[in-house]
Amino acid sequence: MPALPPTRIKTIAAFHALRGLPKPQHPLITVVDLAQLQPLTHPTSLTFVLDFYAISLKRGVNIKYKYGQQAYDFDEGVMFFTAPGQVLGIEVGPEPVSQSGWILLIHPDFLWATHLSTSLKKYEFFDYTVREALFLSDKEEQLMIAILRFIEQEYRANIDKFSQSIIVTQVELLLNYAERFYNRQFITRKATNHQLLDKLNQVLDEHFSDALQTKHGLPTVQQVADVLNLSPTYLGGLLKSLTGQNTQQHIHEKLIAKAKEKLSLTELSISEIAYALGFEHPQSFSKLFKRKTNQSPLEFRASFT
Image 1 (tube, rainbow, N blue to C red):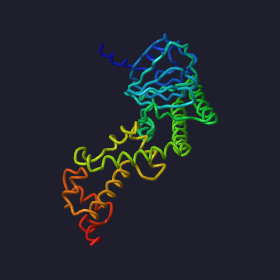
Image 2 (cartoon, rainbow, N blue to C red):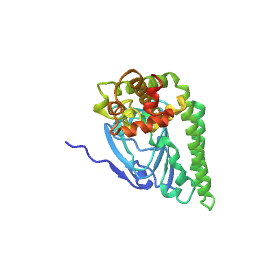
Image 3 (tube, rainbow, N blue to C red):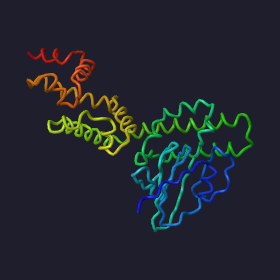
């Protein structure tokens, strides 16, 4: 039996109705206390698409939340961020469900004509997957909850000409803290992150092995991220924090190292080396090599004679 298409939730009011909540006090923004949600009948599996932003802070939840094909079991204080149009899912098992945490929902129309409507795209964690959630310390969690409660208090008060700018400022503050905490997470999980760096180098070594080069072409950032089971944006941010280079730069670094090896240790022509490394056109290889080394492939080879 084919899987049912995801349910599209176009408005915040529709989300409230789906989860058994009273009508939202503001049509374009809401803060939901998970403890107030209508319990889901279990076992249950839901897949849906939101037409608005969702910022979720969850603790001690024995529900599996899915993003695409990945499932994540939230049993610690974590945050994740989703943008309009992303496919989400909920799976509830046979055990009793306990929920704790908060969800901030923001319709894009609320941000219209504010600076955040254009600057929101700079926060790359909206492109991370659920398995790349932000793990919070108790202190960080309490700070985020305080901001969420302030936003709730503001839109529940009498709306005036200052309300939107005050709320947007608080949303931006929350996002900036999230960015800071993600960078802290990159640093504090050094052992795991360096294992990923080792795995990345292994993946690139295998890709540029003689058996695979001509068959697979040049590796892309997406291909490398897929092998590592990471989103491209999360992988790029992680590598940037560890080495100062993004994923594409790492790929190029490995490629140039392999090219130097072939130029210095073999008698293959420049075209043969280019094709062996996965380039469709030798000129593209020569151009990249010159840009990265300030020498043409022929000049580099001549320095060894």
